[in-house]
Length: 376
Image (spheres, rainbow, N blue to C red):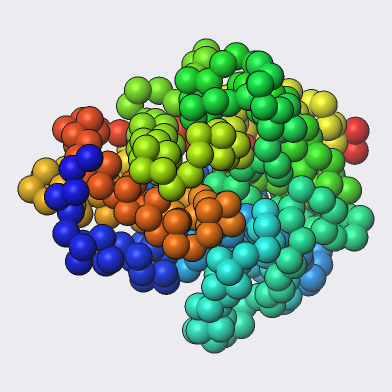
């Protein structure tokens, strides 16, 4: 193994709210939100709102910093303008609820910039947070007018039990994600993915008023693509090549046993539009207004020359990126803090020595869906 990265370089990647903050590393999520903003705005305009001064909004799935609020800002501004006409100029009171898949430090840190934002805005909306995961009922029946969720629904509620059965056809030996896995493993994930999305939709069906709007933005994959990611997706490098090698390094060094590595799996599944449609039809109660597969150019493409000149910076950037993608808490809970630090050091070294993605443009696939709550 090449240990050319300096100790100083490795230590600099360990910052918590600095170098490894969601806001500084969620380039793909920010680009996807920007690309889907017009679709979101159009969906809100299509809502048939009646006169009212009390509107409730939910944002399900959080990241730290500005990305958490950018989509909510859009929803609030469009609703305020729309309601100003309906209400004859009367200022509406808006409540915004925030939830995440799991309670974590990231959930609490997401609210740090909120006080300043609300004060700057002249308190345009009231905010609340719920610590319960969004795969369950969170609000009273018919309570919400708009629900948005961004870069969250690709995360499963749990690892399929079948995948944890050692020695079975669904035992995901030698890897931690399903890219390149056996068919039985992928099918187990697909089954859990469908179950989770249907459960999410059933909960929202109860909570959203008839005529209300659900907007979902999730990582996905093109129709007809059997594997989870295409060759030009950076996720292939992040969650397979580099991730598997970092785990293998721990095995080779004697830090963990092979069975312990094999028992760790990333609860991530990228649906295609047909799978999303099937879940919506299975749930009922929603009419799809629009669905698009967005191909988002990776903003890291613009830094290719910088990374070629300084591979260590590329290693740090990739290690930081994977840590904010809901992975670090899972690794730390599994390995403990000390071994987790070693794991990400190995990850950064592997990225610095990997030239595969430095000279070609990468992309992310995202599925954007706007749906209206209907009677049936």
